[in-house]
Length: 245
Image (cartoon, rainbow, N blue to C red; front, side, top):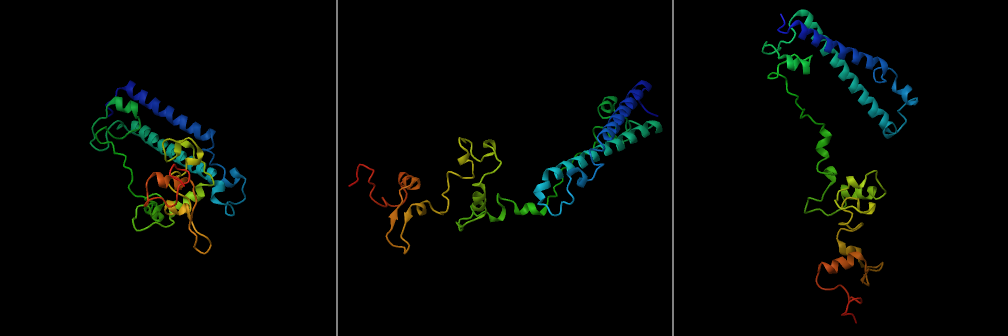
């Protein structure tokens, strides 16, 4: 026998019936989240095989979302039907673990629950991750060599920077830096690295085609090199300074 009064039981049954009717109506009106039609019919594509996966990315995402919503509603209907069946059998509102009565207030909040608060199964986030993620850490995966002292060659980050220089869909809010006043400085380490060089001095020390006649290109990196007092002394007389000759 149920420990609820007839009035309480009727209220809970009405709540369950109303929610069930709402879900069924929603599924009927939206044709089960549009899954009544095939993806071929929805997109107008005869076949997705000859297309780049990105061409149908949005459609695929929407369809996966619709499948998840449909599964959630179907699972909810199963729980509601089970609760209504428990009412008819006379054991509604009893914890499936400890067999103790579930408080009426809890049943009002979750009328289809089978557990009391103490024995409610915890939602556990699975620790099982795709094996591919092992190769995505750190950033740029195994191809990032920034953290290695014995490597200074072209790596995955450099490859991304080249691609990124042609533009991305990122906004300043998604930039790596905090003080972004131009789209030109949004790229990763845009102001810290010199393109095409490993060391900054390589950007302003030049030779002729035979490797002779060393000269200096007096660019921004050269000025910064002098201001930071790197190297040993001036690489060439600074004709713009007061000590020029």
